[in-house]
Image (cartoon, rainbow, N blue to C red):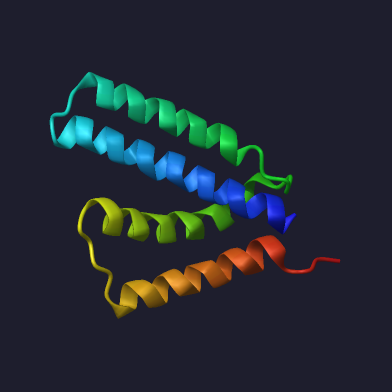
Length: 109
């Protein structure tokens, strides 16, 4: 399951964060309708990719994805907005990834 779910989490994060970024650019930076439409399409793609997760539990998948989203958002900010995380950002992201691992991959009876 891990070999399939990890890449799906990454693709979902790129689609959601990228879509939100495009929408932000359209609305906040006045980039226009095409940016907004591209953002809406990416966000739709995120929803479809999230549904491909092998775990059948919607709540579990979305809860775990929240941690991936946090880490991905920090990385996106570094790549596209010049954001530089401090040690607390890094520590918080690490805690989130531990949470993802526990929620998704802990052995269950």
